Image 1: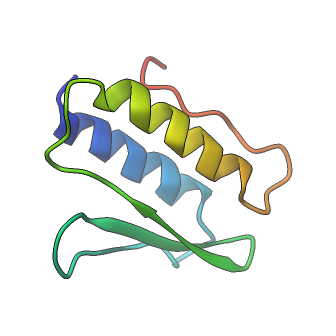
Image 2 (image 1 turned 45 degrees about the vertical axis):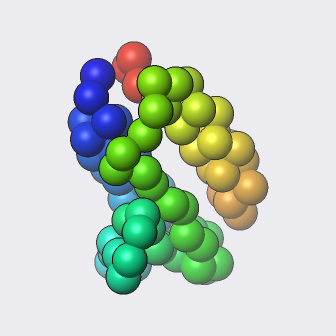
Image 3 (image 1 turned 120 degrees about the vertical axis):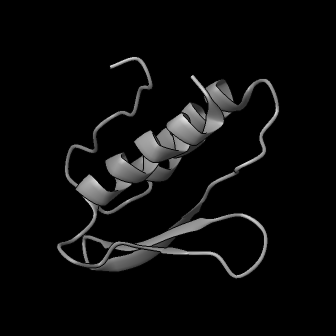
Length: 82
């Protein structure tokens, strides 16, 4: 799976978890950032558009760690191979 496809999947996943109408993408310079409110708390997750070879493995672990830190009951696990 290409990095752009991985990032689209991540954006879709995070948008589904976010509070209604709070999800947006921010990019001033550098990496794109997902900004949203989760359980009333605003949080950000940074993506990479030019990753190395282990990006898929790295981003899955990082995203699952991010989701576990959110104030959600029974947080879902992210997997690229759903």
